[in-house]
Image 1 (spheres, rainbow, N blue to C red):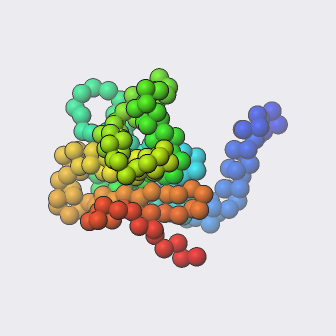
Image 2: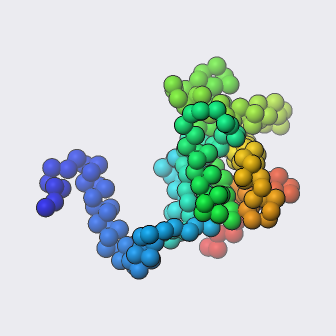
Length: 220
Ligand SMILES: [Zn+2]
């Protein structure tokens, strides 16, 4: 029995999308889905922003089972902490590194990031939200660096610099987890950073040697 006749517009939209998925991508990858039914073995973890426009699975055109993804406001990774609390990102990083043994963790920021805007706003004595402001406070070190940079003349420059700064900050914080540091030092794990420009759909990759972002050849 289906119940779609009394669906809200949002439910209806999702049911329709699900039907397209069943007819399209699921049919195409049915065998893969069946194989993956019992276990996953992704080599790549991506930590991205929750923003609706920066979906890693779409941007990297990945198959089911290919990427292990955590998304949150501004793609932030907290530093390693042993205090109690709900460490959702830390739990995902632990699972990815110690159980799935991923070979790469990519932190991906993006243009027009509301979380980054909130971080800059908090520095301006205008904290946003009950939970957003304390969450983005995690990026305060990167933010303070941006605010102290005399070369960044206006709000757009500072926004872009911090969108990339939070990627670096999350990468630095990842290395505070003992199991991450050990895996990197063993040569079993790479940590990378990227930034996605939404309008032009362009991906920029962090060159860790020059500490600069370069444009990945889109091929078209
Ligand atoms: Zn964002």
